[in-house]
Image (tube, rainbow, N blue to C red; front, side, top):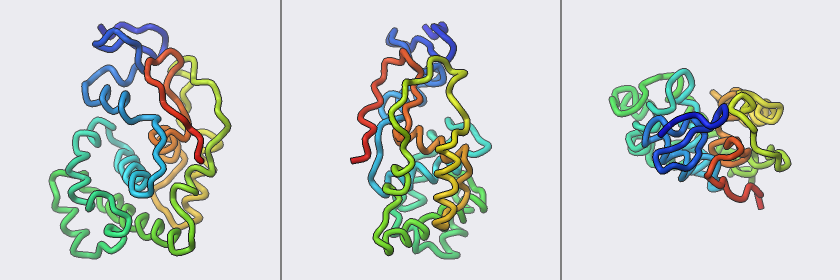
Length: 202
């Protein structure tokens, strides 16, 4: 059922074409069909995806997906307000939690990024406003998997903007993964059966 159609596109078990990476496991297919590329603009939702993309660095995304509920439990549902108040005892708790990726640098980055997002709020700004300010004009979907980039000028710009506001662990590759996950860009391969949704920020 998973025979390739064009580079970057494959037939899913339901017979409809999807981005090729999505058809290897039910976890990927559910994430691809229900979430990936659909616009996310709420603060805690964006924060969660930023954190998970940072945790994914150097690992399989499947590992992160399968630990997602444990991450949510460990990080207070990715509430910016709550995570920003985490202290040394929370760091120790997280480092001892077998349900998540126990990487000290990434754990500290999540807490630091919650505080950076809180600081944005205190200045009357928002994480959503910052992320969506980088949204490029609508462009055609990639025609093949080879056309899906790893880094773009816009992801470099977003990484710079996040770092300028005090966010960490947000290089241009992670920034692009965030943009893809949250629908800021639509990188479903042309011919994929999933409609990513309305990308407009307003």
